[in-house]
Image (cartoon, rainbow, N blue to C red; front, top):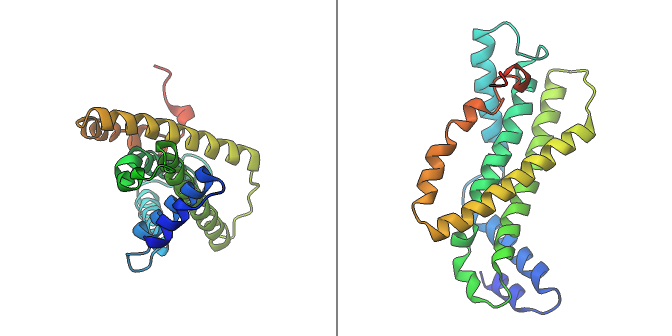
Length: 204
């Protein structure tokens, strides 16, 4: 904590230094205190995908697209979890970093951007590792459309930042909003296209 406060207090680029200090604090408190640290960020989605693939491979012959259950659900589950995690973390950014807001160099924008950048990079690394593992494990011969993947992740990240920033303000102004949003947002996992193709949904 002393290193973080000293980094914030230094001159130079105040915004960049504050964001860097907040990112280091987030890494230390979120991943540094639990056994395994960052390993759980990779193990958790792998375990979830394994359960999804096992369950649906028993219930159905093939996934809605292609013939590999793990690949199909990974392409839907990982971006959705990135959106969910980032929006939740950004939504709680001011409350999480409230003690550091006493420093003049730390602003509300710094707290939001620090949590957004750290969690975005974390989920990108997890996506690359998990997808590479699936492709190598199943020896898949697939062509990756990198522009489409980048566009999808960019749109999901932008949506998460927008929703999280809005929730950050609303939860600070209306304390009950966080509970209301958690209830409203629960069905999103079922209708987000993780289990099926969005093209198969009716227009009405």
